[in-house]
Length: 198
Image (tube, rainbow, N blue to C red):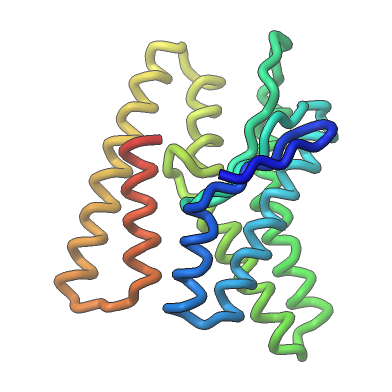
């Protein structure tokens, strides 16, 4: 792992990140893999901007094989539901905003439009109600806001079980259908991994 300490936070680059990017570039369209990486960086930048706006401090920015993760500095100060929801949704909002800008102002430029579509897909993908994704975290945040803590805990456990069941069923269905898209299977296995372990 490569650790780059900066004044306010640390950037960690896991070797699995470089391995995953290299594998995607080798097996898929090079430009598509790089554009997806740029869209992921834009997504995380949205979270960082939101964290700065609500005065949450970043401790680490970790790039690893399964994605990019922001770790905020632990504090005893209680964050509000609105602040947490804003930070969690900011990455998806910036991706979707880039898509809207691409369609409205660059509709004739196929390359910009394609980058807009990739941003839309990254934004929507992260809104999936999987526990480790923004959509899942938003849903769990809503559970704890709307229900007593014991009920919210049970709902969070059921969400995890439902995620595992759905993703496993989709993997089996695609395999039986004869789908051979490598990236699709990597994505589904990543979803299954995050549903089980995160």
